[in-house]
Image (cartoon, one colour):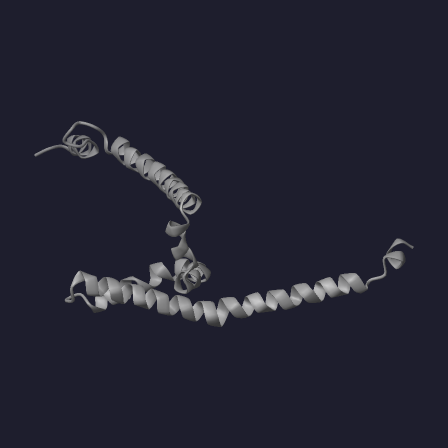
Length: 146
């Protein structure tokens, strides 16, 4: 029977003899570097594709791609919430069916949020902004200095 000190020492080290803290720190560092470098490389790839070839960038002007671009914030907000339920409901279905159902659910919730929440607030913002500009123009500048 091992003593509690021996058990703690055995659990604190991995089979290779390294401490778990070091290996988890390495995983965290590797993940943070990856999360930093991946978006930068993706941005460089997109800029190069748009700069060097008109043919490769023409897909960005397709109507459904522009719609996805306008809905991208809603997709970002709802993707974590809406991808899991279809997976759990369709456990016995093939993975491809689960993936398609999850994407369809995410797009449906994102479209509803975009059309019923985001766009009305954008319209309201524009109305308030133009009203504030009109009021600023109507104020007499000579009355403000006296």
